[in-house]
Length: 177
Length: 417
Image 1 (cartoon, rainbow over the protein chains, first blue to last red):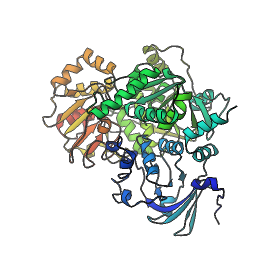
Image 2: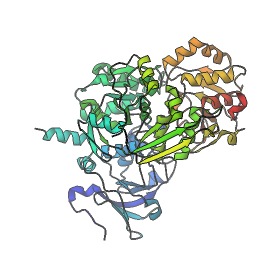
Image 3: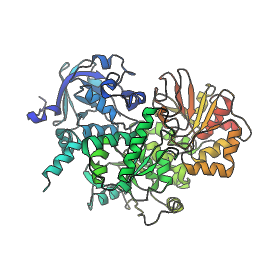
Image 4: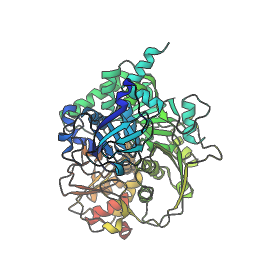
């Protein structure tokens, strides 16, 4: 049986939901196109990733999980891309790898992500999956498969628990002597 | 330790660090453009507030807009401008050039420095022998602005050696495009990439620029060229003094070491949807184009203007092509005025735009309707980035862009040498 985390404060670090499949090298330009950049977030979330999957913004439900191939979130480092994914209610992004500015942005806004090298082959669109950031494991409840993933660095877990880098820095200042 | 580890160790007050460590290090220069400065400012003002620890280390360049096209955009620029004035941030307002070229040309990047930027191509500054990485908005709001520091995970490093001499018609941009496809998008993800070898050594500063620029497209966190006589000569030409030359320790080990000979590479073209799609340009010959542009992070250099002048010296622009030239800095524009390329290209039918980042994301120029095709020196090809997702963006060297502007279609630039 896969190791699991139990602490309730870590709830967001174990995400469970329906998987939405995307491919390799998805650019932030296609998560939130430039023409939408300065619209209110409520408007942006109605269009996220729609160039790739027109059904996605209308059908996704709070708690759903994005599953993607390698280098997810490449191109422009716009933080609005992960912020829009977070605002839409996605609980976690699982990808074979992330573009690095996108990865930074996710941790810094408190959006859980999990790097899982074999995820594209082991998950089909619509499967129910559970992503455990602390143990570093992805469970596919639909197929009963359990996949190893990269456990999250302790410093970054602290950032996610705090709700992002701004909150973490404020907490540290508050606790400084 | 390598150059990156040494700079991150110095910045975080440690004697030694290794790949995988997470450190908090002091920032010496932070670079924002008009789009990201706005996002960072809003997050800072709404969620952090207070004063900036070292506003003089922050450089803001309005480069996506050389003149705001709408009231909304004018208001965004005005708010960011007032933020810069209030806090004492260095601002290069509209018309000063591309964010990276402007910052480099105006001597904000000192060899050996720890540099961060909001733009994804910020690793380009590694050409000066610095650590330079792109950060997200909240890094600036939470750490860089109020504390002049940031968190970094120390990257593993890849060494890329380039040898040989390219054939006539194959420019540094062609080599960089070829290399991007050869390595593969994302294959350098999270790594620091070092470029070296006799080919890199032989290049002038602004041609070296194209290699750390390309490193972003294979996913690198940062990239560098060890400083040498070319670097120092360039730094001194900008009036820089009292900088620190940082080099790899002797015997530095790399996670991967790759070596390529560039002498057989033909002129290349990058085609949609992503930047890893690169083939010899002759395979695309004959595709009609309506737009051609020199500009962006990787174009609009004096070298690019010179290549265009070479092609258009004896030929006019094609009547059905709009050929836009966007200098990447005021310095480039001055050089074109001084050496006659400004009037030559104007008279051959090209249109000069203000120094800026040109059609990048079509914020201020360069949108296309469905079915239109552009060829440019820009850095991205994603559908929908410049107007209709049914338009098409090709990337190539300035030589190939100018040749296409004359022919009205994609051609092998060797036909026009």
